[in-house]
Length: 255
Image (tube, rainbow, N blue to C red; front, side, top):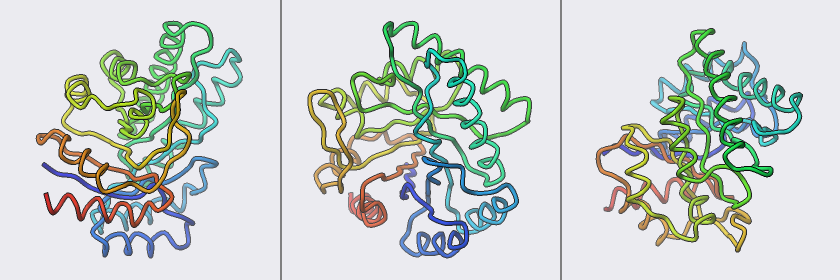
């Protein structure tokens, strides 16, 4: 079983090589670049960062901007969403990143109609990726609020029907379902490589409120229940994501 741990943040371009070296010293082998507010790495800057990450054996991924929605009732917003995701793919390809994680969208009135619209958007994105001969994958994420598209079943169905990749956010699953059915997750995601998000989370009746530092018991609960025959990247999104990732690695080594 191979698990790579890493934080959801690289920081500014000018300090990126140094930050990656720090992560390596801490034993971290993954890093998600947060394009959550903007795609801040320029095309000419990306190759050097990607080269450094490869030298250090750190696998990169990208989180697309938060303001995306493949199920908007405004065509303009759907097109803007696809452009933002493809902008991430373009830079991600230059970085050598494995995947672009994104929030698929909101339900509106009809859940099945939402599924159809999001599926259509993913097919269109994948056509563009193929046209550009990019290797990077797009990964819709399991979401933490009950009124947002992204249950385990919905994301696994998208993977099955479109061939896209996926991001399993176990903190989101807990917030949405009030429990994590690890057997179900393993069954519906038979793929050998998993991209995972995990951290502590505060949630209520409607789901996720905010992330928090992961407690030791939560780390144990996750690491003991992950399948043994997968290659897994665990990206931590807590407010203390670097220390948290190191703690997860420490606990994993001790299992």
